[in-house]
Length: 439
Image (tube, rainbow, N blue to C red; front, top):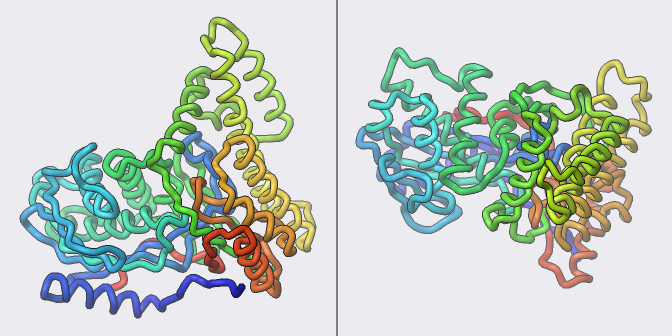
């Protein structure tokens, strides 16, 4: 079978399209258009909420929102990807309230910004938005379509709040301001949308660097670009959307996050990352796991054998993934002694392969479609491949030679067809820029 590629649309076409959608819905021209990117994570999966370092990059695929401010506290929105008009006042928004689906991300952001003190309380009571949404970020693919929507809305609310208050500084104008907006978006997703995600997705959407993978230390969400020039090395990062439904609100993600929190509390550390007490290394990993297993048998810890059996493999993934991220950073550090040739890239490929095995066997967040995608890509010549995102569906990535992109994609598509799985879709990831105002 022929591989299916995710459709690409020029940014200006998206701007024009979402403007037309806004005009058709509300009868006038929007005040502004904002956009934010989807993301794919190179390494550092399921470690953001444990204080680890993650290495995402922003995708060229973006979510666009056309907006105009209101003064009655009403938020109403339409989407090119959904039917109907969604409407709520900010006073109606609260954890467990009726806002569901994509609209919970729209109204959750101003709610969180108000509760985080990013909007004046009196102003928040009156501020509202008319919104139209369009996106090329694949939905349900584990590529952070939700965070892209949240961050585009965050910029829109930020601008609307500053426009009504000349003394209010525009948060999006500074890195620290964007960090605070990202934190509000995380709160919106956790408390209003009901998905207990970490902070990686929102951080990369708001602070991405064009052309760079971003290293994000999730203990303080500080960021630094990493020079991993895949295209310059004649390689490509192929994203495989398995079209297996990607769900984070069915309890599986939350269960693992809660187990990591239990382990953190038992260990008496602020984050699981802090257990390393320094740079994560393979040697320290071995000692940490041995210490944990011995401690789990200590009656004073009140850790039952069943709890230990459940938590140990999760810890093994979290800590080993932190080591893999450190090894990747060391590999591409300017001071690295590894030759700038195929050796460096083959080592990166092995890190990707090892990450997938850990996510599949220890963290248990893979699924048949992801495993088929990874295995088929590896057999077709990929230097490395792994699932990316929360798991239980979604997408995988494969590091491939530039000339082999189509070959690997066709091999994966054929493997899916042979197993009677829904056909996957493909795109090539190129590090792109952060959330921004378009008009």
